Amino acid sequence: MTTLEKIHQSAIREFLKNGFQKASLRTIVRNADVTTGAFYGYYSSKEELFAALVEPYVAVVMKKFMEPQGDFGEWNRQLEMEHLREETGIRIKWMTEYIYDNFDRFKLIFCCSDGTLYENFLHNIVELEVESTQNFIEKMRRNGEIVPDIDRHLIHIITSGMFSGIAEIVIHDMPREDAYIYVGQLQEFYMAGWEKLI
Image 1 (tube, rainbow, N blue to C red):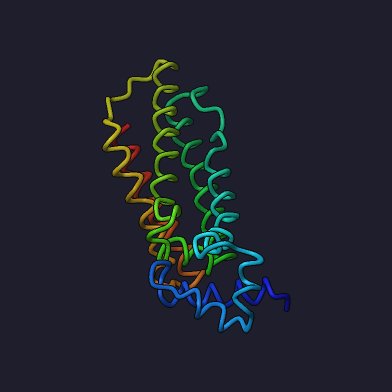
Image 2: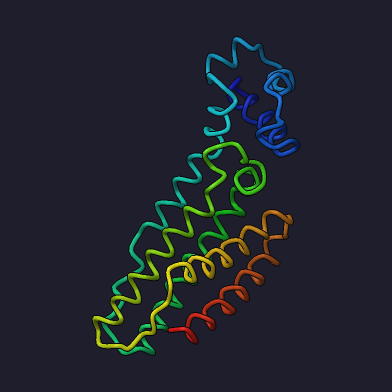
């Protein structure tokens, strides 16, 4: 195992145990069995170390949710809603699988990131989804559909509830197979609500 790998493994354990703010850099270095000088050869601070552990995973998720969700607004209302349901399902399934393939990193993000740039990760994902939802509604209107006015704050609250629910699978260490069922049911619940509103 390389020095950097030892630092990362020790850091993950310490951050998971104590969270970012209470984690001890001295403990990380000691448990990695490396010198403080060796640590500073890689990172200048605890913040930089935490970022190195989670930023690549945050970047992948943000990129995925910034991708267009398909060309909505080309069909009738029923087909539009079915398309939205399908596209949303694909993204949520992908996110759940990616979380479980990198569980410790998302545990750090969801449970241990207070005091870092990553404590707003869920909020940032929600904002991307709010924009996507508003774009979907506008495309429906341009297609001649009558869609009620839905306040942006309400869209944010509903979307935040969905993604906070997904975070719960990590917060409570839910087994992967249970999480797939839970997230599927959560998606059905929220999609039914959207269909009612729209």
